[in-house]
Structure formats: C-alpha cells, structure tokens
Amino acid sequence: MAQVLGEERELRRVIGDGEAVADGEVEGLSEADLLALFRDMVLLRTYDERSVVYHRQGRIGTYAIFWNHEAMQAGSAYALGDDDWIFPSYRESAIGLLRGMPPETILSWWRGHPAGWWNPADYNVASICVPIATHVPHAAGLAWGKRLRGEDAVAIAYFGDGATSEGAFHEGANFAAVMQAPVILFCNNNGWAISTPVSAQTRAQTLADKAVGYGMPAARVDGGDVLAVYEATRDAVARARAGDGPTFIEAVTYRAAPHATADDPSVYIDPERVDEARADECVGRYERYLRRLGLLDDALAEQVRAEAADAMRAGIAAAEAEPPPDPGLVFAHALVDPPASFETDLAELRRILG
Ligand SMILES: Cc1ncc(C[n+]2csc(CCOP(=O)(O)OP(=O)(O)O)c2C)c(N)n1
Ligand SMILES: [Mg+2]
Image (cartoon, rainbow, N blue to C red):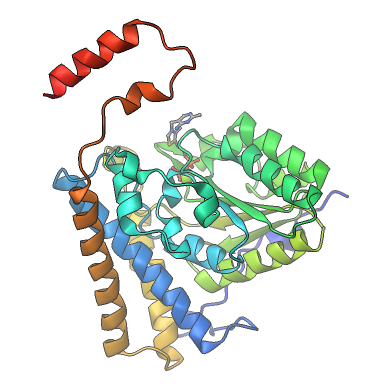
C-alpha cells in the first residue's frame, strides 16, 4: 500500500546542541555502543583526511572525499548484523573498515592496484560502485535471493541525491518493493551531484517522496546526526528482517568538501552553506554529545584518534610495499578467446613499463 510522507518529511534528530535543543537518546544503545560508534566515525574521518594528503603527495589517485559523511556511514552500518550485505558507492569507499577490512586494501583500490580487490563474500561488502546507481538493482537482487533461500540477511545500498535520477535506481526500487526484498535504500542527500544542485535534479518536494511512488516507506533524517541515522536504519533493518520489505532513507547534509580531489567547487557552491556545514560537522557534533554525557574525555578522544592514525600509517606503508602488479592482468580476464593482438599489445606494454 502506498505511503504518504506527511510529517515524516521532518528530519529526525537525536543529538541536541547543548543549549536550546535538548539531547535525546536511542533506546538499546549501551555506553559501549556509543563509544564504538565514535571509534567508527573517527576511523572513517582519519581515513578520509589522510587520503586527501596521500593524494596530494601522489601516493593515491583521484579520491572521492567523504568528510562529514561519517555519521551517515557509521550510523547506518552499526545497525547491521555481520551477515548483512553492504553495497557501497565510491563515496562509501572506506566503509569496509567497519567490517574489519584493512586500510591497505582500500588504499590499494585508490592506487589502482589489484591488492585493492577483495572477495565480497569475505566481508559481505560488495565492490565499490562507481557508475551511479547501478548497484541498487544488485542490492535488491541479492536481498531478494537471501529471502528466497530462507536466510534473514538484509542488504543496504548507499547512493547520492543525483543517483535518484538514474534509471537503475528506479528499476532497483520498484523491483525491491514489488518483491518485498529486504533491502535498505540509503540516500546520502548532500545537496549536490558534482556541480548539479538538488533543485536542478528533481521537482519532488523531497527525495523520500520518490519512495511513495513505489509503495515503499521512507524516513528522512539529519545526516549529521549519527544516532538519528542509526535509529532510522535499525527500524528499516527490523522491517526488512520481518519480511515487510524495503525502506528508503534520505539522510540530509550539505556537502562540506569538494566532490573529489579533481573538483573545484568554488565555481558553483554556496561558501556560506559550506562554512555552516563545517562548523556543525558530524564527528565534532557527536563528540560534544558524548562529552555532555560524561562518556568521553580528552585522554580517551586522543587515544581513539591515535589508534586511527596508527592504522592509517600502517595501511599506507603496506599498500606501498605491494610489488607493482603484473601488466598481464589488464588482458588476463578480458576475453575468453583473446585475439592474437593481445600478445603483441602486452609485449608492447611490458616494454613501455620497462
Ligand atoms: C552512470 C554514471 N553517470 C555519470 C557518472 C559521473 N558522475 C560521477 S559522480 C556523479 C555525481 C553523483 O552525485 P550523487 O548521486 O549526488 O552522489 P555524491 O557524489 O554527491 O555522493 C556523476 C554524475 C557516473 N559515475 N556514472
Ligand atoms: Mg550528492
């Protein structure tokens, strides 16, 4: 049955501002859970900030920055079980860290090195999807398949605001709803698809409204509020596991960093909105919340940051210690019956690479 969004258009929030807006809490989250969420966010933040530096040093290639997206990624991933599947886009490239994937694997991916390929079944994390929205039908299909097999795993697909204009998004959403696939469609609405603003992307009042057309429930959350994101995802996971089908979550932020290291947003973005977003960035917002609760002090915050920095130092060292890949890999899996020219092309490539 079709859902009408109504008051659900309001953004859900849990974290207050320490002044006029009171802090809320999420039932069922222990103190250990709250600190684990902080560790996850700091790990992602550290990965992201170090990656921009590594890019500038020429140690990784073009990189899609996710600064201030950590609450959306950590909050939603924390609501999943280990058997649940994650389908990341390039914006969630490092989300595997939260499943124990070593930083060097993801850094190698951004170095264009085969050591950055992983077997999705090892982590229940699908490969990083760069074509916009093409992983939405994959996630819906995997989730449906799990259900047909009588397993209770769910899948989550991450994508951006711009992705909701792509055919693959609509096919995946419709398929998921019709089949009642246990999938969560998690949209990070950061206001921009590179230089295209949401206002030029759709006439829908909100992106969550698109779910209504598919008869799918939707929730809108403040994407900078890790606890609101967690809660909305936990509800969606429960619904999916209970056999009640997919949910669309629209998590709203404002993109506080360039689209990627190759982008210059100064020619199109609203600098005041960026300043606002940076002043209220999600890791700091959550850190202040934990301090108000008395769960975090300087020493612990410092320790968490130092651990994340150590993990990244070890990660880039391991990635750089990988021997150069065999150029033959470029051809190896391309065709079942390779043409004769492959051999001469490969010989030429080997000669150029020295
Ligand atoms: C099918 C396809 N078309 C175009 C592109 C080029 N492209 C890369 S990122 C991007 C914008 C996507 O914006 P959005 O979905 O809002 O995600 P965000 O980058 O903001 O997380 C586009 C158009 C692509 N990667 N794939
Ligand atoms: Mg976007």
